[in-house]
Amino acid sequence: MNIAQTAQRAFLIAVTATAACLPAFSMSKQEYGAAIDKLFLNTQFNDAQQLCQKAIKELPKDKVFFLTKHGEMYIVATKGRSGLESAREAMRLAPKDPQVIATLSINEYIAGFVVKAEQLAQKAVELDAKNARAHAAMALSGLRDTAIPINDELDKALKLAPKDPISYIVAGTVHLRKLEYDQAESVYSRMVKAFPNTALPYYQRGYFRREVFNNNGALKDLAEVVKHYNKDHYVLMTRAKLNKKTGRHKDAIADFDALEKLGVHSYARRAECYAALNQYEQAIKDYKKALDEDGVYRPDFHQKYAKTMGSTRRSAWTQMMNGKDASELSDTKSCWLKMIILQQKHGDTDDALKEVTKFMTVFPGDLNSVYARHEIFKKKGRWVEALADISLLISKSPNVADYYADRADIFKHLNKPERAAEDLKRVHNLNTTGTVTGE
Image 1 (tube, one colour):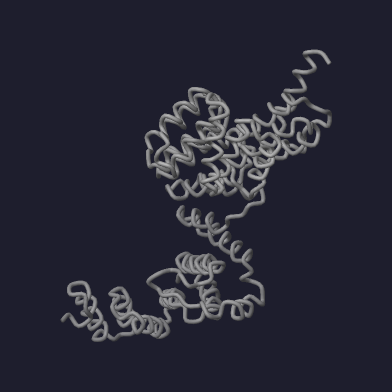
Image 2 (cartoon, helix red, strand yellow):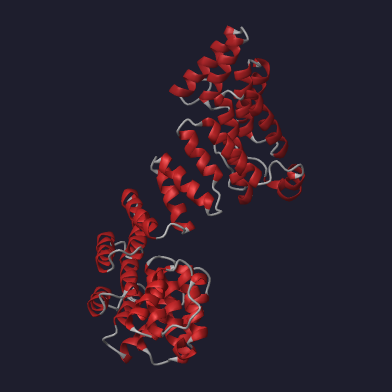
């Protein structure tokens, strides 16, 4: 094979989107390594892991090299224990390789085996004092052992291997855990410069910035990640949530749309964005999709809930969800109530009344729904029924001024000015003295 053919083959490998699409012909250790690194730096972790496994099968003599590569994935994307097990197997096969040992040390620390991690880090340094990753592992263990000079170890790691992404990741993690935010920012920015035109540095810095509430900076970094690889559900969801949190509702909707195309639904969150933009019809449509996905519109939903969750069905108006509610239904309850309130606000009072009636059969005694229904009754001019609901709420929470103000308004519509005046007096008392009587 001539040089041009070799270069062409390496190019095809490097730009492939998934491991499944890789050419069927055999590749060398160097070619596999380059392709894995490209996927890794492009944050295509699953594809990189699959390619590691493929390389191990095709090149068993280089198993240690690819097991170690697979272990590196765990350091960044700690999903499951496969990367940890790969790193452990690599050490069993190469018990005196400092790079293998250092990689395992970092894996063990992340997995919570901190004593073992420190022992391995010390061993790696003893075997090769010039191994950068060994010093990075020592620095990480310094979070537990104060005798270890963390900053000195990190300096050694980054000077010895300024192109080792794992050393940068460890350095950023150490500074973050020590609450040294400026140093962490500096390390991740150095990583960006060390690996230009790749996604991983922005991925690391973006999630760091999110942790320290630098939302604008995080969004900029995540945008760079998406430019390189736009099919990572985790990154897209993170950006969607940050866009939503920071009031960028149109951008959040675009992210949720992209996720939907990838088969990941977040209807309730997208509905909240539509609602914030006063696009009520789209919001209600998404809320209904979310509820349908939760099974709310199945005919047996009430019976199923009553049998399995009957002991945790109440929540107070003062808090949207009660902490004792079953977690798998808390989001459903919140979503359902938000849709009902939005329907009422949009003027779809008949639909809102229908939904709240069903809601109350599933969650009897829920005071959120009582308040929502009283608002619907008011909108429909059914003042007597609205009065019954607000009076129930007052009996449950007699020191809420807004309830009395609501009831005063209802009394006015019922042509009972004296009763309205009494409630307005109670509102005044609560706002000035904190008691209904004013005493």
